[in-house]
Image 1 (cartoon, rainbow, N blue to C red):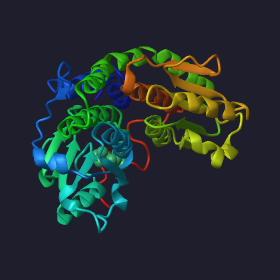
Image 2 (cartoon, helix red, strand yellow; image 1 turned 135 degrees about the vertical axis):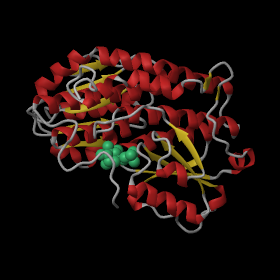
Image 3 (cartoon, helix red, strand yellow; image 1 turned 60 degrees about the horizontal axis):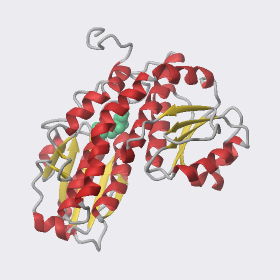
Image 4 (cartoon, rainbow, N blue to C red; image 1 turned 180 degrees about the vertical axis):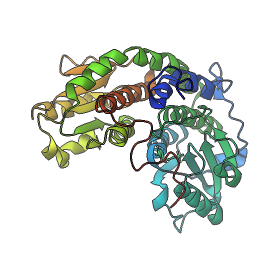
Amino acid sequence: EAAEKGGYEHYMLKEIHEQPTALRQAISGRLDELHGDVDLDIELPEEYLQSLEEIQIVACGTSYHAGMVAAQLFEEHASVRTSVEIASEYEFQGGRDPWRTLVVAVTQSGETADTLSALRKANRSGARTLAVTNTVGSTATREADHTLYIRAGPEIGVAATKTFASQVATLTLLSVYLGRHRSELGSSRASDVLASVRNLPGAVQQALDAESQVLEVAETYVDSDAFFFIGRELGYPVALEGALKLKEISYDHAEGFAAGELKHGPLALVTPNTPTLAVLTEGTRSKETLNNVKEVESRGSPVVGCSSLEDGGLLDAAFDVPEIGVMEPLVANVYLQLFAYHVANLKGRPIDKPRNLAKSVTVE
Ligand code: G6P
């Protein structure tokens, strides 16, 4: 098993470090940056794409957070109304036109019972379905009309890491595919998005190279009462994912909030012993989030930023995110993964097999 971990103490840490490779695999052969186009090998009929009225994303856990990122990109790049639903809460509502609806099941394993159940409801309703998965031949691929692979390679750690990155990258390519086929996304804007995706593996590597800084910050805050994560737009799902990662493996109380919601309640929880981690990158309305940073700081809470901006010395610690455009929040997420890992490791938690959790949950 030590050999399989490739010198890392845990699978999770190995998989965090595999992200540049996983991302290169996810995008390999799929980008045509020159023409602002992608080749995804999913044959959705042209006429269907043009008349598509709605996308519903169904997923659980980390995959749900990837779906939240995707929903924003589908709306922005393809002008199609998109909802993202927790798979166990999903029902195909009456009054929608199933023939003009695409239901996208995002599931790393392709075997999560809740997601399969949602997929079956969508199939029964007559909607077209697409599985976005890591697992060749999984149940989701057999039951959905179409399949898009994220090509992350096997993930052993219970807490999903590299598969989240690969899901987001692949779903971003899908947003470009939809946008181009629906004539909603011009080639030069599409090229910009694709350039950001191309630059992502290198930017993630830069974050990984700064791991010792993340360890130091983890050592500073390891004994905190609770941890809060804030972000806006694409930074909001990243905040939720950062909190989920930390609670899964460290067992600490961690919560993610839409930064603007802090003042509507959660601010009451903030004390000098509850650090806040903020996503301050492109695509996250970071200038507005900085105002929320000030709100928590004035209550004495330390703030750690994953940031590609000049913060004017406001932050207690800053993890540097390279300026690569729309994919920057995914680099912030890598810092949050490393933070969760090191907090949990300092506490001696069984990181690859957290209590009560399973890699793939096959009961509803
Ligand atoms: C379990 C895992 C999570 C994962 C979720 C969805 O709860 O512990 O890490 O995000 O299932 O898994 P899926 O395979 O459907 O992406």
